[in-house]
Length: 270
Image (cartoon, rainbow, N blue to C red):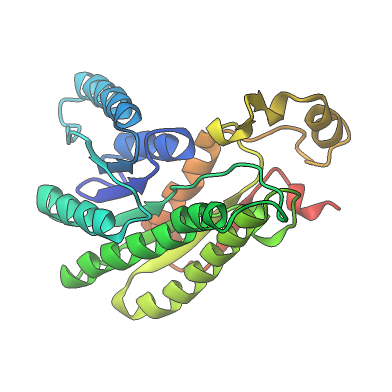
């Protein structure tokens, strides 16, 4: 049985990395997918890839729901963009059942030299973006009496300190509190809000200054050989996608306000 047949899933930052892995999994589970992102090129490529997957699934089973995915160019840091995104999702699919707040950005920045503009740039995407998306998606769910699910993609950095990452870590910490507070406020409407806190995951955000940090000697020595990550490897987007789908499904019906670490055990070491 397809867990998300007849349901609409909105994913921010859904064209690449964890967001796209989640979109692919939701598609295979029968969902209507709405991807939001700033890059139209990446969005169009993601939609084409999802359409190809759907066509293959329909060839194998003609009864498979052939909902075509939708891309909406959106800057989640701008509330008007987010409002338009949710309106279009509701108009074109009739509903919003699941929101995945995945949009994020990161760059290394020394605390003493970074500008206020740089601080706000990261905070606006991660924290403000999730706030705008949660508010406008939840309004649709409440208006349509949909008992929906919201999944926020946080990071284990939300409760750890890291050099040159104060803006990102603080924004993810704010996202964790947004998860808990909205879980409390939206529960009376039947809306569940939870989060996933990945560790090192092999995505585009792993490439900093043109170098993939997961391939450096320091990472391989400290995190892999010395098992700072007990499972001795980085994770894959598909592994996070399975947790997202679980939290969005009825299988997690009694989980509310939780933030699940998915880091290979990194957060239990010191």
